[in-house]
Length: 327
Ligand code: PCA
Image (cartoon, rainbow, N blue to C red; front, top):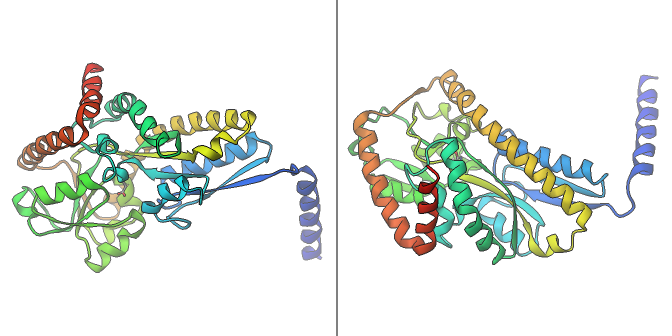
């Protein structure tokens, strides 16, 4: 009897939703690289819901977290080529194409949420231009919490890092590994738990958030709060798809994007303390790095800043100058 009642209720619900569904409903699949539990993915899911609700169901956005539709490294290309209309990716993941994309991974340039917002303001016009040349329209961008160093054992100086297998996620993190004598191996966040468990990697630079999402305390024991930089994720839409989108939908999407950027920034800040406590609860030692390690890393930061300025040319220098002028 109960089953029958449920069935009747479900059928009634279906009938209502079919009647209410717009005739020309469109679906946009949205690939995302990070786990569903991550705050960027949660923000993306809310953004998708906002668009679906705001367009009265005429445009439904469906998120696919954890690299389930396209792996992180393939997301931008998939959107450029129209295999997916919309998606999210780590901006500095494109640093190998153009150094400008790495503006947010310069060690010790912008180390707080406030500075990260200023740096983004300085860089945004250049990044929007670069993306539009690649058939991509920027919708919103949200920073990760400050980047710190994860290790299996206690480490108090750069010399002690020598030979450690280091998981990298962009050019800057690979370069950091080289300059500290570690051995870089590029691995997507979705795969790091396994990489640490099997010993493919023994260390990384990342946020407390990613360590928490991937439960790295199962393999690693130390997190040093270095606050090296705050890299950014961004949501992009294929520019052809965008220009074919009716104005009424564009308005909803831009409104939802603004809301998502605001909510994502707020979440990133909230999540910083929460996830560091999560690492502690998992059994890790979490705290600042030794003075020696900080000053040695800052020296490496100077090298990396100069290398970036050289690679990013006048436009890169203009970004850094504009950022400094906001201080
Ligand atoms: N998490 C992402 C990028 C930066 C971060 O905090 C990662 O580790 O892949």
